Length: 428
Image (cartoon, rainbow, N blue to C red; front, side, top):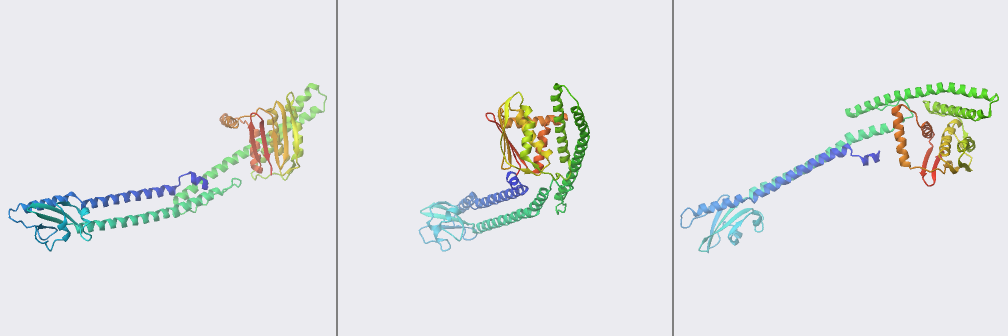
């Protein structure tokens, strides 16, 4: 479950990403707002206002016009005399020109002014200043409010993400755990639908409906398999009985080999029907039987030697350690016999080595081998074609796989074109 989460984008991540994106956009907007309000402090408007006030004062026509002594816009006329008492002393040291709030920060700390110094002749200057202290204080307060809004919004977003995690992620995790606990070997299992979220409740109800439909389908398939197995057992028994009757009579030598093949095929079909009946059982429990695998392997090798007739190939039996498996002999015969038959049919010269060591049966043939990727692709295509046409190819492989799943055995097949194919069956 954790691996799937690492490989997929969870709903919580998506919702968190939306919240974070919203916070970033809001923070960007507040930053732009702060920059715009700061730009108002140093706007060219103040320079134009001071120039206009100075020009209006000089246009009065009086010999010595006086700047306005009070208000937000104030002025002073500086000459060779003393500095006016109501003028900030550092204004007197300013050279002619315009000084915005940023340039004045190096002269004053508590107040904020925009200052224009204009020379008027005879060494005199007119100092015109506008007090923007209140405006800057307002701008600073707005910036503080923006910061508080950003912090509060961030806290609300973090709380929203935590709420999503608690109210959505945990119930979804519970739903996933309940689905994970469903055992396909146990029929009539259903998910509990006691979820507070209506969406999760609906999902659980839909899953339960799907489980019910799957169970009905499996029951139909199991019933069909069981009935077919029983129906096939009767003609197979008739064929086997006919073979026994024929063996009581003297037959031409040419009929002995075909009769032996008929008998062997009937026995093989009987074993397959037994395996199908076993696999169709609802409880999936095998009869309480044990099989000596080492002795059975020798018997199966003898049964499959006829497949090597006319070939320059032969079985080589290595170490066969004693091993008893808790499984009916008919089931084991199908699995091991299928591996031996595949090796014999694909070997034309050399040795087929058979060993049973440490609970592992290995069969190494000397065939041409095959490309495992290409073989898997061809087998998948064959299965699809068989399913479309209603065929039944690969019954031996199907039974081998199902038996291994039922008993917990493992089957590995590796192939090398230069060394043949190695099939390994681990029983313990």
